[in-house]
Length: 394
Image (cartoon, rainbow, N blue to C red):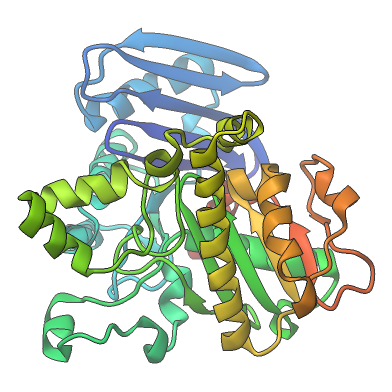
């Protein structure tokens, strides 16, 4: 391994990781620690086609990362060869606009931003602190979900609320999934054989969390997620856009607290709230069985996505490429077809046969001569993180 990078993605109760050789861009090892904080946790470590499975309790991130070091020492790869650790960090606010080498001041800055991402930044900080303790002699780097969208113009990121209130508390649109949108937009340029600076793109990151972006010449100018990852498209369990007055209505009429409303909109809404399931394979199966709720859920999902595509077409003025990525975007031809068919008159010409093909490679699914090229491009956030990490080191 010439330049192996350890990449960590720490959630509230899990740690996902990969080791990528930044020179060859091959995955050397990967794994996940689950149920941190519970009595019965698990660790699955994959290396050279083999999986090491461990059942044991991990009371906190510190103990989980300490044990992970032991697994690396026992089974490989050799941690002494690791050049750096890259940490996926959800919210950088206005303070962190690019990938950053981590020191104590950066950790403190992340703590100050925790009110903007109370579900994401605290476990990320716990993971950073645990990893720095377990691997103290290796550089640690923070890669921010929000960084790619730090280029949004003020007209796009400003909310029409009291300006002094917004300024004092950092209330504005930040956007998320930036690492994916950046990677995919550059991959599209590579597939089309054109400089990214010459392309106007719309990228649809459709997974359990979903977002869409407008990218002009490689620079993000609009995105659907906002102050938090709740805004925008319909998602697996998140509502996406709702009338802000809904919060007051639920409090006034049902006596729900703000915490109750937050839980409903983040964890009991979206496809789960509409159809009772979050996996689109289940949604499609229910639709095939004649389930009206599942059909409505798909219709709402696609209508919201279409509304954003139309909006971003107006923002950009010209669109060269529309790209689908992430779990749903890459694997659900029905969603893609439902959306693109309704864009036919705007120059998005779907190739039905190409859309039906399942493949792991980037590919066009529009007909030859289509004014807008429609693509499916698998995202690779870990590879993008590895590249960002190496760029900071160099």
